[in-house]
Length: 164
Image 1 (cartoon, rainbow, N blue to C red):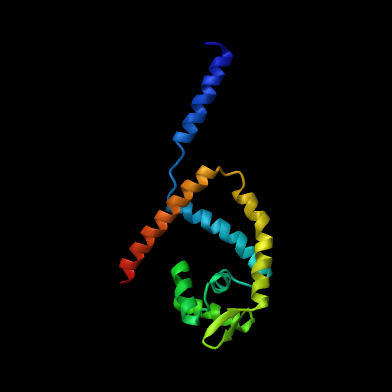
Image 2: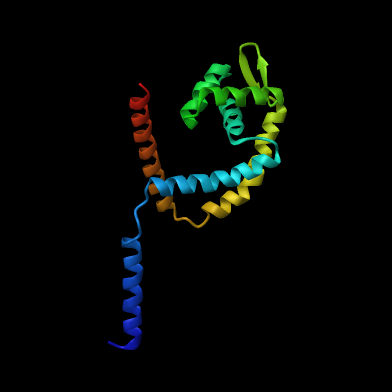
């Protein structure tokens, strides 16, 4: 075997081995990725005087097809975050105090200021998100999406048995 052939064979074997021996994702990896990405978002939110939980509540109110009552939002956000209802209620109260949500009869509606906050946060995080997610092959993102959906489904099922 020539030196060039040997180098090519070695490189091919190394590349092949790297993909087949990569560690499998686990719960810790998922948690570390979540908290790293959430840390970026929380940094941006802090500059606007908002918390992660407030942003989730406000986004839920803004993206809902129909007006939501406080209890509707509490239930929806609890499903997303698995957070203590009292903490979610506090976030709702804070959004109302900041006039990012407003009561309209029995329903809560996002104000223009609430919409502007989410738009500003989105604009600030978009280039960061592009750098974080950019260059990941579409097939890897599709596989990760399938795995994360399955993990979420299974974890939700386990949580419902623990809290029943």
